[in-house]
Length: 209
Image 1 (cartoon, rainbow, N blue to C red):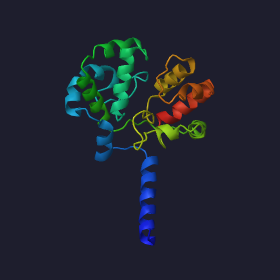
Image 2 (tube, helix red, strand yellow):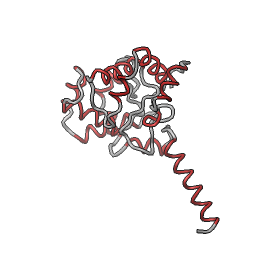
Image 3 (cartoon, rainbow, N blue to C red):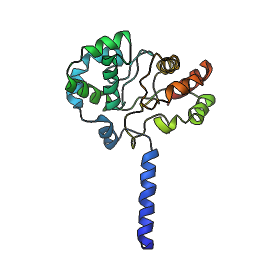
């Protein structure tokens, strides 16, 4: 291989690595990537029943209801499926999910929320929470600032900018085993190693991103 070709190959490798470790944003390319195969235009009307809890644009006003704005559509779809199958439980969501019998509707609803600008919060200075996020390797799955890993896929959700109360509940559910839908199998063990204070700290940090 010539020196020029090696140089070009090296540049391409750097670009690919940068794409792998970049976090998702709201450019047309990034929005299209996370929207998936659903129709966001059709999904806006179909999501009317979801908007009561999650907000018209996916930014819920109630801290215990998760924001869905800019979340991966495939992740949203998979969670609906988990509620339907009973592998994830919630008094409200289980009933709502069971009412969704059309897979195309589920895809369109997920695509609509995914097409919105990514969730964000009011910045919070929490050095302990940031250190926990980095030291525990959370960024390896959820992205540098919790906004997702576009080069991977939608297995790991966007959590940067999510409600603190919701994040605390999910961490505690993983800790107790009440939630066991993590495809990587890491969240239960990670949550069990963390104290209540540490869960609060990392959740507060993430909520402000």
